[in-house]
Length: 274
Length: 274
Image (cartoon, rainbow over all chains, first blue to last red; front, side, top):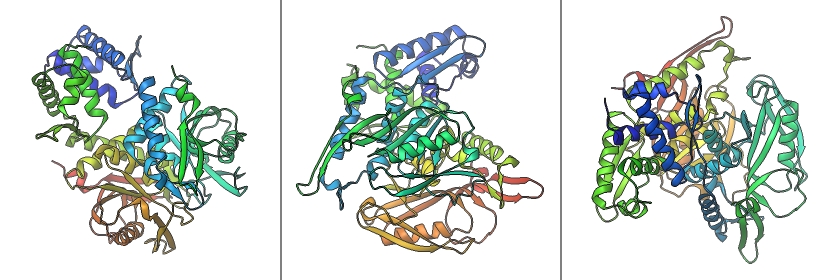
């Protein structure tokens, strides 16, 4: 169908935003919409301008024979801060205190609309690193990491807590949880990750960092280069974590079982964004 | 900023498609873009027409005081069949045969772009049922179910294989896997799912249906109404499954360890679509 600009531009916007980071050739658009290259280029510059003004992400043009255009999710500062402030408000609801002083956050982690936004925040933070894989730990790391992987157009690899995995040869390591000092095991199938890959680790929660340290060790077994580590919520205590470089979005200051009070705040990375 | 139609329509398209099923009031658009209601209505009817012609989903207008407009992912027949044929091609790669005659599909299940499409297929199939929750089983059910939940704008609830869950009071049941006749346990936190909810179950794999039967039983403990059950891959054998009503997308006919051959095909539901 031959379309007018206001019609064609709707379809082009949808196609671009449906596939973050995927390079789409101009030819694809000229053929699909039976339009001249110059016409499509004008469409794209309008979309680019609107996305920039409305802070809806970036439209990037890559020139050359293998070139094309792609959509890069890129959340603005205000948008990031609003999402995290909203998340902190949800988290500070005192009915989330579980016996033993744990914080119930499973419902938030399995809320797709919220995790979509959190994934885009991590994608914004980690966009320029040249990662090839996103790594996480089952079970609760998966929704966040999957949404980040979607926004970065990267495959996700999920480490498992069990070695009874029917996935061919498996690399397992033992690790010690930093807070409760229990010895645990984590495993990853050899074929899940090529040796020497560039990876970003994303997980839901960090207390002392024992699990994160284990994941770094396991990545070492795969000769992977860990470019960065993102966690949704870290606890303020202990201040000395077993890993050094990471980015958290939320800091859990305290859970007071007795006063029924949860104190959370956006991380320094979130509040210092400019 | 005051925009021209071709500019404003880009932003309206992005806002709608970012939040599937979410009802957005016309006032939101008139205020954000400083435009008259009639202008926004014209924008929306252009978007509606383009989405319909290009088979990009539906734009639905809900009238009345609490009304508004929303985007409903709705994949066309061709699109669904292309995704599933592509998936079958990936799956029939003989290097996917694991010792013991298992099929390696973890990489596909953790491929966000592919699971995004699969999730939209389930969302298209289950769109009119009035479900309140999507239910799945950790670990490999999560990516598919999360993407379906995203497309339906519903919360996801993940059943766990362990009862050592720090999530308050937990309901656990024993079940027997249909193929290997092993007794296993699955658990769900009481607070994860309100009693009497309407749910759809989505999982990655079904052989004899023992796990699916267990999930139905567990839903019974929550007095949930199971509206439908979707699985990505079912095996052709045994033909008698422990559950009756379900929709699969792919049928695994046979894995021949010796000839190194995997035979998969789109399910009857996929090929019979009109």
